[in-house]
Length: 98
Image (cartoon, rainbow, N blue to C red; front, side):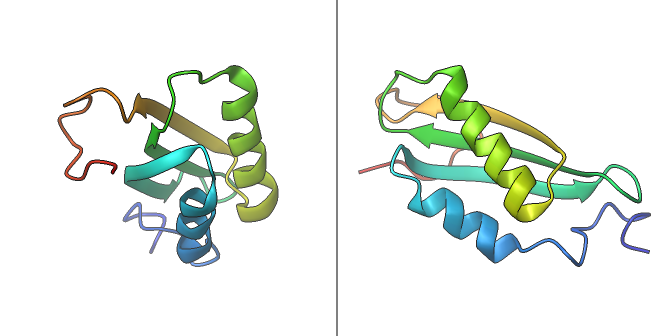
């Protein structure tokens, strides 16, 4: 039923994912976090990350993707990166970083 409804799979630790993102020193905040099943065996995630500095590189993104895969079983993650310095960087963002 969850698969048909694109609901968060029962085995996904959403609180753990949120905690991981909140505790990452380079991430100021995040929004629009969505997790859903792509199939009966693959899970997808999208998230907008607001980072403290503009120096984001592939290693930063890869480390997040690897952690999401290894710790939470997320096989397909799409990450949008925004900087805290830019005002109105995303029309979906409701909160700003201090």
